Every structure is written in structure tokens, then in C-alpha cells.
Image (tube, rainbow, N blue to C red; front, side, top):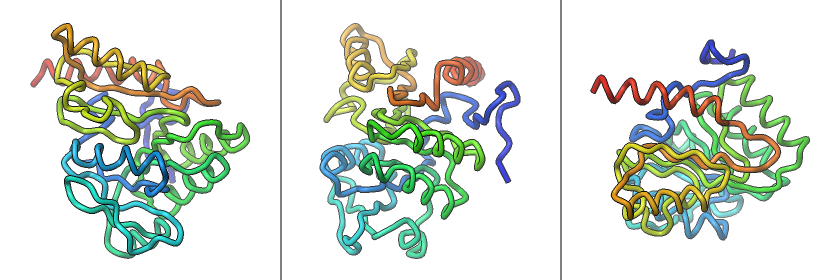
Length: 236
């Protein structure tokens, strides 16, 4: 049964505020954690976020670990093995090759009913697969970012999920402030955050929406969530 979403949308959207995009409570599973891109990005994200990645998967590499400044991340063959080992997560990050993305997303969502968000870094996902991914997210009530995105971040809480927003030293670029950034380009998202920090401005939430076939989390969702974020922070 699908989780209840926001009534204002004709399709499923679960995120009600930009404050919910990347939170301290989020726990992450990374698919293909030992791949070339993930090996360089994941340790930085894990350390910057205070250790929010609970495990990763890479077929044939169970028992290995990904070393990070915030501690080692265990590696399993698949999602089920990680969960049977006692790990719990609500966010999936996908670094798989294009032909494997659909099955990877299905594995995350079908095996773990607690998944709320999936972030797809992979680019050039086939249109047929992208349609099935979209349909699965809508059916199960999961917010999907990407494909071909660079992830999401929250400068207030030092959280980065997915790709390399903020570069190798996100603490220098993602400075706490009042500007939310939404862009289909991950590099542009980081560049604007850097220019703002040089000018004395900081950021709140940063979203790299991706620029593949589907923009699963798009401008209407961003505008709605941004309005609620402003309301929440005025109350605080």
C-alpha cells in the first residue's frame, strides 16, 4: 500500500519541506559502493555527515570495508544481506551502471519497505527503465532524485547524500545561510554555492535534480517544499 503523499500533487510527493531533503536522521545504503566514482566520493560524504552510511553493496565483495575518516563502512553482496546483518536504512544511493539501475532501485524498494528516498547518480538510464523506476517510486511512495544527478545536501546540518556537492571539502563551500539551490547540474550547484560563500552568503538545502530522461524531483516540488521551509524556520 502506498504511503500518503501531499494532496496538492496529482502524483506522489512525500517530501513536505526542504528541511526533509537531507536530515541527520537519514541512514543510507550505497549500491556499488566500491565502484570508481563512489570510492572517491562516499568517504567524504560519510565524514562530512558524521557517519550516516550504514552499509554498501558490491557483488562478490562481502566482508570488505570502505575506509573513511569517520570509520569503516561494511560491504555486502546485496541489500538483503546487509539488512539480515542488522543494518537499517531509509535512503538508497545508486552508483550502478545504466543497465543495472532499474533492478537496483527495485531491490532497494521491494526488500526494504522503510525506504523513503532514492538518489540515482548514474547517467544515461534507458527510457524504458526510467519509466519503470518512476512507476515503482509512485506505487510504493518513494521520492526519487535523478537520474544523472549529484545528490542533495543540507548546509545547516552538515549532511550530504549521494554525489560530490561541495567538492572534496564541502565544509568550505556548503556554509550555513539562507539560499536554497535547485539545479539540473551538479557542478553548477556547487559553483553557485561557492560564489555565494565568497560573497558572504550561505545556503540551506542544495538539490542536484539531474538531467536524464525524468526529473523525478522537479521545480514544482522544490517550490512547495521551499515555502514550508521558510515557514518552519520563521517559527523557530
